[in-house]
Image 1 (cartoon, rainbow, N blue to C red):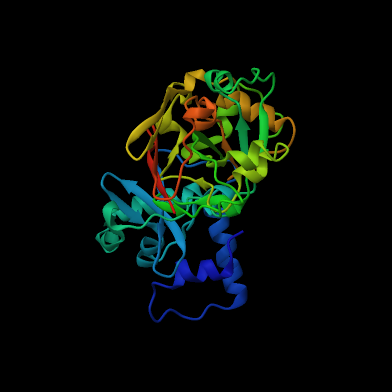
Image 2: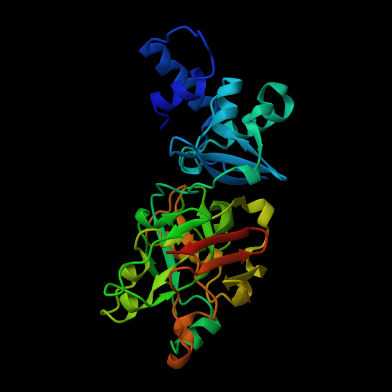
Length: 343
């Protein structure tokens, strides 16, 4: 739902000397905006989006246009229009139409030129702050299952992360004390972003419910995950253990998600290098399977698993765990490069 506070910020903040709006008038304006721009079945298309960390500590939406970015919050204020200010809001409220209108207005008006800034000048924020669900699929690449001597699953293996784990591109992950955990491992993953409510959908129908894709990193504490009674959730959901970014790319721009190259680099050295055609359960099968158990909602995100090459899959005498000072980079075709460092 559009809050009165956000409506006042985006509609009124850029209009000096505007008349005070009564509560009844504000509600009418809110309903007008929702009717005009909010459509549950509408998903963003032809866009690459990112998040901007602002001086006030908030994370708000940006639209990538070549080497530049449209600062959506600033553009909305300059133009006096309504627009979703975060990716969560865009997806959960079905406000793709409002964003499209803003992009067109910015490109057609000199008034909003100040809202177009070089991407090199921004600090990246979290793409997602409050998704309804963060779902992860384990053991979803054939060669990964083989390298850790696990049988090929007959159904997707699901676990979860929590919102405390969400982190931005170029973030720093502060590692826990050694007595808590020290066997840190990398997992570059293709991440599915849901755009429409999905319940009991078929594999063939599943693409219609996917808004787009991101790079997600399922950072993992293997000792917590595997040596304390199978605590997968604990081993994978410590603070900042889910960096995502730098971009959300709409499904139409990604095309077939099952032929993408994934790579992981640690301090510039390649550690993982494989393609999504090695999925055990592809993206559409994963969405269909999950939707038969519970409803997927707009803004839910799904980590689809990692290929072989992880540290835990190596012989024990070759397992050199990640440590403070390491820089990890995840790359996926069409989605960019996600980086973070350890401290």
